[in-house]
Length: 328
Image 1 (tube, rainbow, N blue to C red):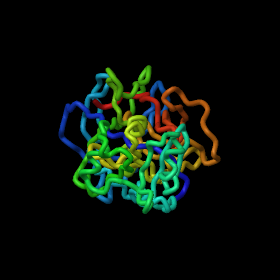
Image 2 (image 1 turned 90 degrees about the horizontal axis):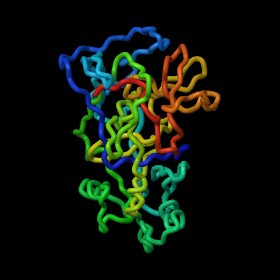
Image 3 (image 1 turned 90 degrees about the vertical axis):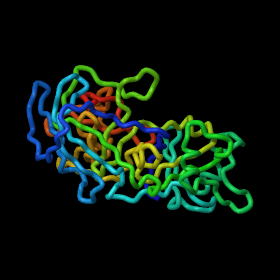
Image 4 (image 1 turned 60 degrees about the vertical axis):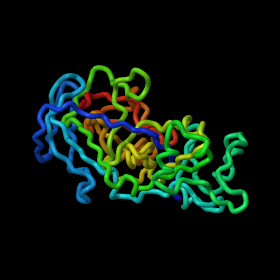
């Protein structure tokens, strides 16, 4: 297994929806580049998405944005099935398995291979003897193997029957699932950023953005809830996993999905945030980190306009907020 970055999958994921003003779809066209008082604004380029496999379809509709204005938005319908990399594996089958047979896990900002040895040593790793996820006689790892087990174990209220399970939900369980999100064609920067939702009383979206392959950049995984049930729900090498509500989705950017290199050595582009601003890798091609990012993890340059740089994979985070208006 190559370099890995953990991100554990949220058990229930919600996608931001848009209030509809005009449901007549039109085919997206190549965008122009407007200039405003905030400098160059780079329109979303729908041609960057991987639509040839049929897993992603894009049309254009007018929608209401979070700032109350009406704007053209791209309607992106995705099967959350990446065409640019394989999904899985997640759980190894035996404590003798090497790192190629499992996914990744994060703890304290670090990324760990979920190989057989990692599962075998969970009691030591977490300093808790209640961890026992394998058969001491055969070495077989206790893991979900059916859709029913996936649904039962990938649940915030896991019962005793599914404690000490490695949770692995397969693509076949969500083969008919689709998700729809809307992204403004022309990003609209706000005077103050929008906080993400997910907590009590929150009103912002939980979705962070979308990769060019149509997979959602999701909220941080609720690792505390997972671990409290003595379960493990690894991500694959691409930082993604599956649950029945969200399908396949990312919790970390590990460099496996499609990225667009920049001719000036700037970090590669990996997708778009929900407000239409570009999302880029954390480091430049020289391996340097950007030190002028704002609280949302964004900054501006004349080539790319305002854009974000994702957090390190072990952080269980992509960006910290939305600097622009999102469709709601």
